[in-house]
Every structure is written in C-alpha cells, then in structure tokens.
Length: 113
Length: 112
View (cartoon, rainbow over the protein chains, first blue to last red):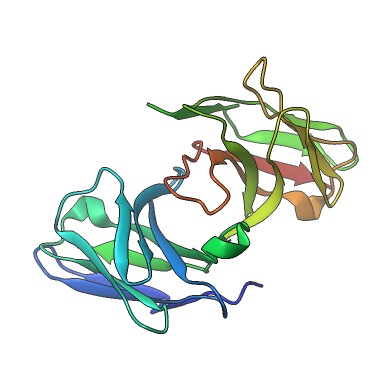
C-alpha cells in the first residue's frame, strides 16, 4: 500500500450537481496529479498541482478544477456534472526534488445519474 | 501527440504459462517507461520502470526492456500465477508522472 489516501471511496450524484473529491499525498510529497479512469479504459491526466499552483492540465474543460493546500493535500472539484463524468478518479503524488515515481491512491468511484 | 498502443485483451493463460503483453508508444523527447498493474477494485500500482534505452525493469518476476529503436516496452513473465490476474497498463511519461499517457490496459486472466 502507498501512503496516498482518497475520500470518499464511492459517491453517487445527479446530473448538474457539483462534487468535491479529496486526496492526501504521501508524507514528504509536494506534487499531486489527478486522473480520470472511465470503465474499461486507461487513466487520463486531468491536471497536476505543485506547491499550490496548477502545473499542467490535460484535455478537460474548466468545470474540472482543483486546489492544493499548504500540507500538499488536494481537492478535485467538478461542476455541472454530466453522465460521462462517471468514472474512477485517481490521485497520485510524488516529490519533485527526489525525482521519484508517483504513487497512486485507491481512487474515488463517482457515479452520475 | 503522444500515444500508447497495447495488446488488446483479455489474455487468458493457464498457470505457469509464459506471458507477453506488447506495448509500443510514440512520444516527443525521451520518456521514462512504466508498467502499472491494477487489481480488481483497486488503484494503480507501479510494477516496473525503465528510464533510458536498453534499461531492463524487473519486479515480481515481470520484466520489460526499453527498446528505443522500436519504441517498445513489452512486458514478459516466464511463469504466471493465478494471483497475477489483473489489468496491466503501459505508460510513457516523466518520472513524476506529469501528463503520463496510459494505454487502454490489457486484462489478464490466469486459470489454475
């Protein structure tokens, strides 16, 4: 097991609602990335945060936004939920200075009805 | 843009059979290459990695060699076990995972 934790583990929302997912990075890690994994597919990069700033973004609309806090934990917010947002959301953390590999959390499974 | 092509699954093998999962990629620059494994209901775990040409990553009996000339990183294991049943993802990217591109995944079933 890695030291990356995510909450909640499962979530059900309805179309048009907003959702916040949380990620606690492994101790000593200062960078968090978020990924969306649709059923039967590989994860897709949403964005990355480093020292509380967005450090890069994949091909996702602005209604996907995030935050990183001083303790390096992170939130993913999704507004105006659509049915296609149903997926497993993964976060991963690492420490830039250590140039090591990212470690993934167990994910939050979101179902939009 | 960058992309990854993985062998389509599912792959079904008997215990102790030899495993190969093919992976080829296109990428700008000189990426590191990773194989991740996802067990049912879980997140991703790093299985092995290679950071430069001709490097061989290995872990738990799995191996993959970074072939720059063929832009490939095929995963192999000499003798699979039932516990290896999972989905395997090939992924070129930088060490920290910035904009890591994942393949679609290859599901492996190992029968006793």
